Amino acid sequence: MSVSQSLFLLFLLILISAFFSLAEIALAASRPVKLRQMADEGITNALRVMQVQEKPGHYFTVVQIGMNALAILGGIVGEGLFSPLFTALFALQLEAEQAATLGFVASFILTTSLFIVITDLIPKQVAMAIPEQFAIRVIGPMRILATLLKPLVLLYSWIVSGVITLLKLPKQRDDSVTPEDIMAMTQAGAQSGTLAASEHQVIENIFELETRTLPSAMTHREGIVYFLRDDPDALIRSRIADEPYSAYPVCDGDIDHIVGYVTIKDLFQRVLNDQPISLDDPTLIRKPLVVPDRLTLAEVLKQFRQAGETFALIVNEYSLVVGLISLNDVMSIVMGDMVSPWYEEQIVRRDENSWLIDGVTPIQDVRRALDIDSVPHEDEYETLAGFLMTMLRRVPKRTDSVTWGGYTFEVMDVDSYRIDQVMVTRTIPQVGAEGAGPALKG
Image (tube, rainbow, N blue to C red; front, top):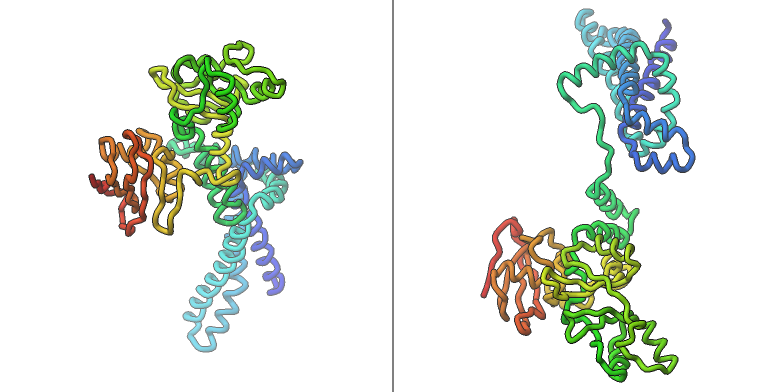
């Protein structure tokens, strides 16, 4: 075989081996979610790739047969092509035996380097960048090769399956997508710039609905605006003007005895028609949705949908009203900064290293605003006030403070045992601050 023929054969072997290497990494790196999207767009090869991913044994057997056979053939051709050339070159300076040895070594190194670079490193790096595009292109030829090499494929697959079963090794990969996987992908998208920070925040907030309970987003008992059933017309009109809301609870004597609710729409119709407003009118009062305070935000959304309501009264285990939540409250949690600064009123940044925070602010919002990864015993409370009570193990008083996660939380104002304002100051960061116990000051 002439030098030119040997070079052509070696080049051909390298190209075919590169194809197998590219086919291997393209299938392994292809994302099922992306393939499903391509299949929905009418790309039939994407479905074929997904089917092979479910049972990739035969596919990888073909790849390994091809790559190993080509590597052996390439070594033979490369040694026959380069060894005489290097031997003749070294013979100019060395003895014949030494020149032959060095010629073989140089030929081996050159041939191996060509295969490593051209058939392995380059195809795999390229395929890792856009695996789905390559996978749908190589699946056709690979299916043909699998048919041609079926006897060998079945033999090797039988041997491999037996060994895997004997060693109790996994046969299939788990392609299920967990919330953690989605969060990791969106985090990567936000860091790369393909996903806006606000969009990433919305996705994070949606998953947070499964863990956040109602007290973290509700209007607390003392903030509820309600009517008594015997309130006069003038008082009702005055309260509507002063504190306009979409709906108002109607109570009998006090807030713990709810008889229903009235909508602002119905009240305005009475006003516009110049009719008196009487909350004793049964046609005006609607039955409220009442939910327990242990529900998550995701669960209350489901109840809103089932009941066809947009707000709910929240009661504790003693059937006492503890708060009120509306659909807008939940959606403001989801949309975050895309709607309005959700912590604008409760968390006020004074300067670069200090914040003034309302005691009823949900602890998740505090963590997000301060960029704190975690707080101790988070499942035991909902608000910043609850955090301070848990850390101090008593009802805080003015000037009490807690240091945690590189911040000092100092109680600034207490009203009838209710923590109104907390001053948060960034302290000097310390290694392992979150793992250490909190510093308390009373």
